[in-house]
Image 1 (cartoon, rainbow, N blue to C red):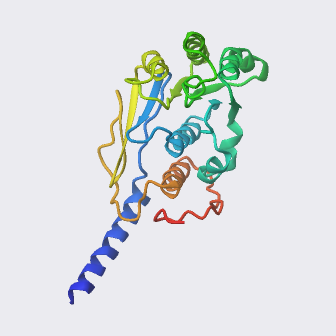
Image 2 (image 1 turned 45 degrees about the horizontal axis):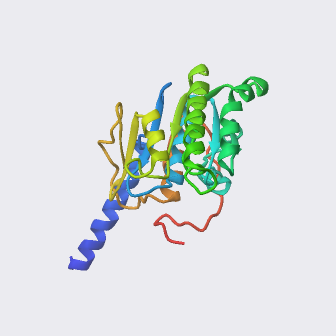
Image 3 (image 1 turned 90 degrees about the vertical axis):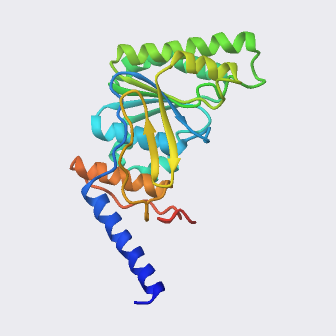
Length: 254
């Protein structure tokens, strides 16, 4: 066998092994059990796909509703639709969007009454980019800091009274941004995610990624997260719908 033929066979064998591994052992993702968590993705300040995948996985495995107070367009509808293995999951995600710090604070403080009025039974409260709208020139620090603190406290209260988990992110760095530091101080339980050549590695107080499928063919792109969620849906006996065409190939190219 010639060297290039041997290398080709090795690649084919690795691909077959990766496929068999993915079929037999769906990748594991961290779960959220009535606690308050802060997601930090190393070297990525706005982890939209990772956050969306965790939210969809939680919705899939718990069967509860999700309250999503959005800032900085983390609740991107096109991405959520492409990631979701079933459109039924999206029916259980309630999104409120804020575009100013005052809107964000108002939505946070009225979320409690919204839950009661709309008869929503949340198992997860999602608040990405918590500091995004406050750390701007639109509001002075003397107003913005207490405004953000009240918003975070209101969100934690809703989660606590609903027996729900809370998942937050921030755009700034706590060591340099006083607004990101407010979020970090209020939500100290941190779930870290590191992008590795084998896939995403999560580590937190009660979870750590220890085993990866073979890396061949598995990319940390939208296709990767779609693959993870499809496995989880199949394991939960949910019919997996065809992916919405998005132009994203399995190797991450357009």
